[in-house]
Every structure is written in structure tokens, then in C-alpha cells.
Image (tube, rainbow over all chains, first blue to last red; front, side):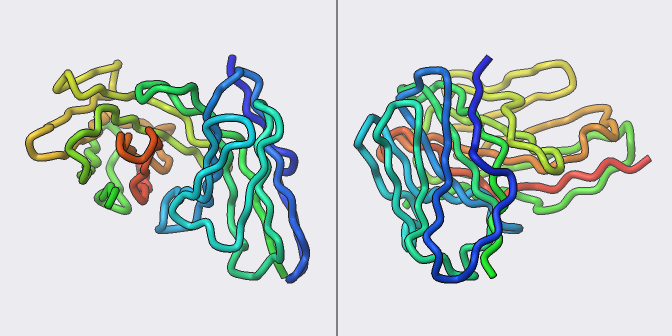
Length: 113
Length: 113
């Protein structure tokens, strides 16, 4: 059974803080993704990675960076948190190839005050 | 660019009625179309998917149809039950974008007793 876990379910940070969101998957998936979910906007892709130390920008990368030092771990970094980054953040993983199921983590509800 | 449009944004049906959610996509080369269900406070989970080489797929009360010519696909839920109440997301693989999923904006389905 695939497991995708995220380091926190709820997080409250102050404006200007550096924030790390961690995601770990245990199925040796090559591909990992970070989305943010906002009402009415669906799931928007922030960054993704096809392999260790590899990263690609998604649709809304501004204000974010990522790190993938190990295959099972994909980190999302907010260099200087702002109130408009208050959102639900979802991590996902999938094997390479276009026809494979994508699995999501439980999400991190981040509030920036 | 890559785009998936989903309608309606909200849908309310009486228990036992059918529900239909429709999506259109922009990339004619897309070959994989999953549907995810997200219950309140939980992660999105795959409920059904369809490949581009078939026109319809059914799993108990859930079915998905695909019209490649028109570039649209639909989710059909029959005999709806209260536990079907959730947000449903359609998605499509965009082959030119490194096989990443682009999601629709979601449909909030409410099944009323």
C-alpha cells in the first residue's frame, strides 16, 4: 500500500519566516509533486521532480523553491512566507510513465499571519 | 497551453438520482484521464480513470466516458448516496509537459436526503 506522508497537518507561521514542508513516499516513485489547493482554484502545481536533485517549475512557482536530495523525500520551501501563501499544500508521487496512478499525501494546512 | 475546464463547480442532487460532471481538455495528445474524490478534510483519492484507447469505463455506480474528437470526458454517478458527497476533480496528462497531470477546478457534489 502506497504511503505518502507530510511532516505537518497544520502549521502557523509569521510573515517573513522561512518555512519547510516535507513529503516522504515509500514506494520508490520517481516523480514527486507539490500542489496548493485553494477554494475555486482546484489543485495548482507548484513544482515537480522526476529524479533526485532534479526539479521543474509548475504553474505557480513564484515564492517557492524545492529540494530533492533523496528519492523518497521532496521538500517545499517558502523562502519568506507571505499571507497570500496561506493555503492547503498537497504532496503527491507517481511512478514514471503517463498511465500510472498518482498518490496524494494528507495535506498541510499552512496559515501565515 | 495546458488547460482542463470542469463544470459545474457545485452540484446538488437528491439521494438516488444521477450526477454528471463534465471536463474538457486542450491537449489532443493526452492519453490518461483520472478522476479523484476528496472528502472533507481528506486527501484526494483516485476513483476511476480512463485511457485514450477506450470510450467508456464502468465500476459499479461510477462510469467515465471519453470523447477524443471533442476532447471532453465525463464522470457519471448513478443511484447517488450521501457518502458520495465530496469534491471531485478531473485531470488529464499533458504529454508535452513531462507527463504531469493538470487538474480541473473541482466540483462540490452534495447528495441530499
